[in-house]
Amino acid sequence: MLALRIIAYALGFIGVVGTLLPFLKYDDWWIRGFDYPRQQLVIILAGSAVFWFVSRHYSPTMNWTVGIILAAATLYQAFRIYPYTPLHETDARNAERTEQTDRHLTLMISNVLQTNKRTDLVIGVIKENDPDILLTVETNDWWEEKLTEGIGEDYPYRVPVPLDNLYGMHLWSKIELIDPEVKYRIKDDIPSIDTQVRLGNGRVVDLHFLHPMPPSPSEAYASTGRDAELSLVGLEVRDKPDRTTIVAGDLNDVAWSHSSRLFQRLSGLLDPRRGRGMFSTFHADYALLRWPLDHVFHSSDLTVLELKRLPYVGSDHFPVLIRLSYEPEQDAKQGESPEEDDLEEAGKTIELGRQKKDDAVIEGQH
Image (cartoon, rainbow, N blue to C red; front, side):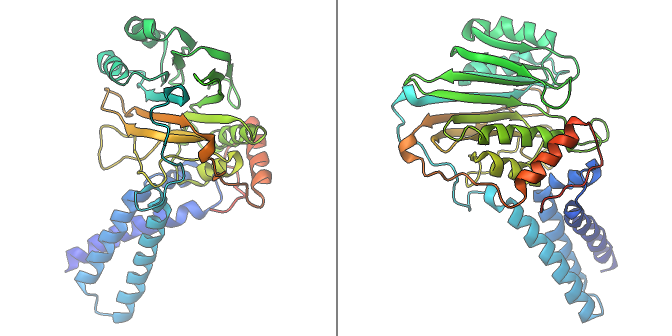
């Protein structure tokens, strides 16, 4: 029983601290990092609660007090990830115009891992799924050469941004790109790509591709830059409310974090995973340490034909693929709107990001 009690203490401490830290309104990596493993914390907290009750502490008051704390923390974590399970209703509607291909657009995102040499796996998955538009990140000159050899004939329209800092980005398209532009919104060495494409039925779609730096001890000390870029793009989308829009990329953020939810409220875009599953893409090598970092958000006039995580390609990320259909007749304007103080928070975050300030206070609610 003593061993069970020690296990319960250890797991409970990790779970409760991991639950409470994200309530602190600071963007330090060691705080914001606990936004990621919420599904793992559900398991840790539930296990701690079981071990606690089985070990039977001599004090009933202690048993119930600790048990209630652990149960409350478990339920809170489960509540945060619940929308990203099939138990929740979907935000993005299922497509009905499945045969009208002139309405359709297939997009694939793959963080290839700059040091990964399995180009055969990456190219094989691309050819098998044959997306209209492909975004590859962590791509340098070497990757550009290998991918051009493997898929260049299939993708005549391209925006290459080869970098050796893990933030290179390449856009490959079968559809002619309209006014493509490489932007450095927050950091001078971290690019994003904006462009448009025209569907077969004539509808123009705005595309924004991002790969901001994550908060971590080895990269950005805080999430300020990432959050600022998400807020900035969210406001840009908000300023064009009648556009058909997709924002996609390795956002180095989880769908249930405060910053991602703020982005959705600012932009009004939908997350097609809500009600369909997490589609966790990172870390590909560790099944127990996975969360969804690669995202596609889209306007409510687009519906979902297919959403899937693709097979292993030698990277620490799985690729993800989505097939969308332009169906404005299904558009119920189901996207969210900014809450009180969201615009003020976004403005402050963008200002801090542009000033390259870390250790900032986050004003919004978590």
